Length: 141
Image 1 (tube, rainbow, N blue to C red):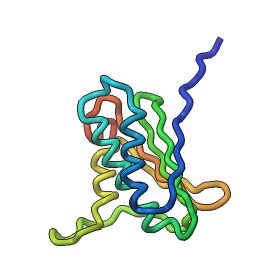
Image 2: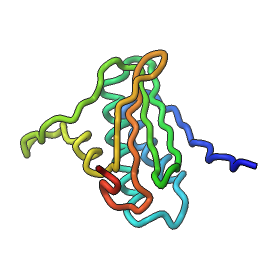
Image 3: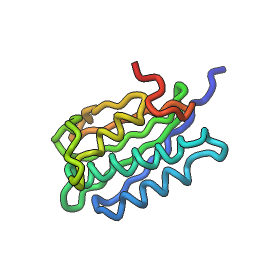
């Protein structure tokens, strides 16, 4: 008989800056005890960056941001979805005194892999996978 896969944990948050903290807290609470050192904080940082980007650039009005977390294939996967049409892209390092512009650079440095995936109806999901070893960028090819 096949093994039942892990059911992803799903949250929906209002498109509001206060949702960033709530999303980070939700992910931290959903993680099992004894997780590899540092992996929880890296997932928290990636959650903050991706939810911040979704709220700032992918939503308006009464929109919501969807957050999905699940373990599979030796990774913890995190997907943050919004209804916006824009595609986030990795940019150049901003000047030292810039107050923003480092989010995807941080995601890129921590995640083993990340991608922007279009959604069927509208919008997109930014999906990042962190290796369960807890090593930043582990598995990056």
